[in-house]
Image (tube, rainbow, N blue to C red; front, side):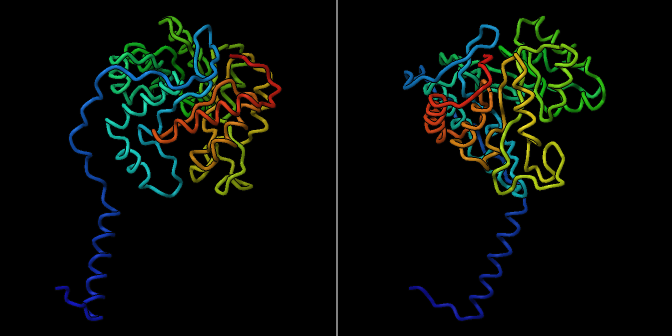
Length: 320
């Protein structure tokens, strides 16, 4: 039999629940527990394909899978819990499922930071998966390029310096570091690329006739509620709310560039719907679009990408 609470008991119980909730919200989440067993057996057959492009003869799907959501890099503005939520959702089993779904829907490449490792991709390969890996690397504090060898050892087909690292190198006036990295990557028989948040690394490479095999450059319009306002000039947005400071400038400059262009942050970290973000990127001249996707988004994002690619209004010739 349920005993009714009087007003004083109700208030006391509510305050205790509120206090417990506050403590739980501010505490760092516990570990996920033991890892899930890997998915076994061969991959299921493909259910659809995607248009592909080439970088130096290597074929990649026009829509590429980004690794941020798997690794927990949320760019969630002032919502600090989102990264924890993403990592909790993306259990080992869920990551295996995501890679499987991506490949069976025609996505044949994952782009992720080398220091996050690629254990899940290694297991995917053991099941017969053919997904290629583009590894992101950073320059060490003293100019070390050790991450390049790690990427090679783990099976990368292409390697590029991350946007934040390239931006920092250019600010320091050390363009030769990028040239040295490209030479090292190519010596290992991998495709060599340059990432950029700001336009500076691309401009400086083109000016110095340093020709990477591809560029990985941010691109998104500013038509979303948390887009930067006048006076917000930081490359990443003062509140982690922007990754392409002047999209029109980027589109105009990249029009003259002959290397393939992988556009990333095209959805402004989830603030722009895929239909709008993919259309803007491909219409603006991107040869490939790199997007983070949860497992339940993959089929729909592939459908949208195919629809967009079938109805383009681009002027830049395909460079890949």
